[in-house]
Image 1 (tube, rainbow, N blue to C red):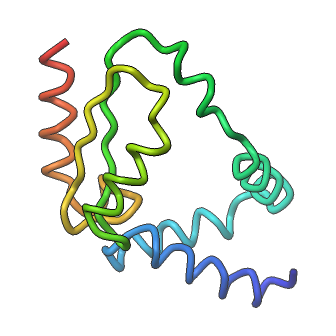
Image 2 (image 1 turned 180 degrees about the vertical axis):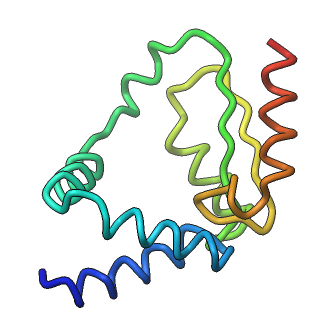
Length: 121
């Protein structure tokens, strides 16, 4: 893919990863600066990786932080319930008004959650 086409794709992906325009630019820049072959193969290898069956081997409590955008809290909760069905002990916490990069969209909320999780363990 040529540079112009890749930049268009990077723009679209970055806009879906954060609601914050400054962060969208940062994410886009990261994608463009990354080694293209590493980026493409890393991403496609990741998409083919299914570890759901291995989750049954995790015996400690797990906290999952996720975002409500773009699908909404109800759909996100159901999706995680299905994907993590083999994980016996987990707590799902959904950030409102945030996309994939929660730390960019809700930085205070994100830090509060991390501090709470770490202080509880």
